[in-house]
Image (cartoon, rainbow, N blue to C red):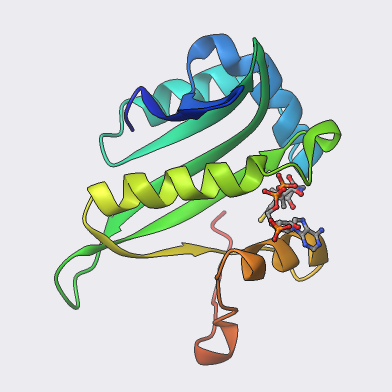
Amino acid sequence: VAQAVRTTDDLVIRAASAEDSAPIADLLTQLGYPCSPEEAKERLATWRADDRGGVLAAVIGTSVVGFVAVHAIPYFERSGSWARICALAVDRLHRRAGVGRRLVHACEEAAAGWGCATVEVTSSRTRDDAHAFYRRLGYEDACGRSGRFVRELG
Ligand SMILES: CC(C)(COP(=O)(O)OP(=O)(O)OC[C@H]1O[C@@H](n2cnc3c(N)ncnc32)[C@H](O)[C@@H]1OP(=O)(O)O)[C@@H](O)C(=O)NCCC(=O)NCCS
């Protein structure tokens, strides 16, 4: 992911760095996945090494107010790739102000750069707010078209 994907007004979308570990851990916790700054730092290091994926931070001034993690996956059954948004959260004090939209648009730009044909995100059936948000951004609920099978290992 490029160092600074887009900058307008006072909101900057940029690649997340180790210095963002504490606010990103807090945002992951708000998302329902309790996380320590140390764990966030380790994950950010893993993701920074991925040249077809990354974590983007939404920053106002010096505050990280949101993040998104996106990763490109090559198709095998046809040419090209698709992108998956793995996690997205905006701080509860900064919601409904366009931050989430900017993060998703930045993902789409990055995904297009990786040659992705589509962007996909899975989101728990309990997250009605997030589903309204994705629909507003033009995302279609495609679950009726395919099943999702998961098996826990060990
Ligand atoms: C879902 C989430 C990322 C949205 O971010 P946000 O910054 O509040 O969203 P935006 O302000 O950019 O909204 C973009 C559009 O979606 C709409 N929207 C956002 N939240 C909405 C909601 N709860 N209900 C209806 N529409 C909503 C906005 O009105 C806006 O449309 P508009 O520009 O036409 O008015 C944020 O609410 C969040 O972090 N929620 C908790 C974590 C979560 O559910 N993450 C997704 C997990 S899959």
